Length: 135
Image 1 (cartoon, rainbow, N blue to C red):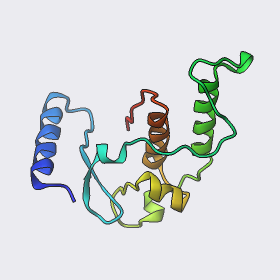
Image 2: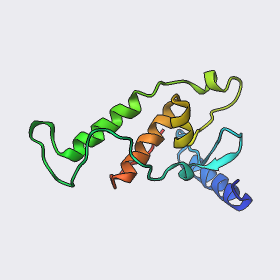
Image 3: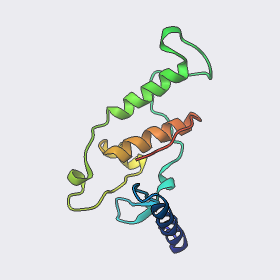
């Protein structure tokens, strides 16, 4: 559970951004599957990679397909894309947008935009690839 101080600071930060850029949507916290407000960066962390038949060394090239790292990034993106898309309105009817952790997402093997984006980001973080989640 987030501290009241963090939640208040996050709310103030979002209010400042909304004043400066009123045509954009900002979030600092989201609801988890228990309905609690969670600071979004808590969802972002390196995650053990799935077995993909690809081991890589930094900068090793494989010819036409690009570097081994590029191939691994593509395989990870494909792996994540193969997990079925399931809207929160189907999974959690009548409830606002819910974010699952990557572990929860991998257990349910279905999720929406956020779960797919966060999982791929977390795999990229494991590979020290600069990545961001923008929704």
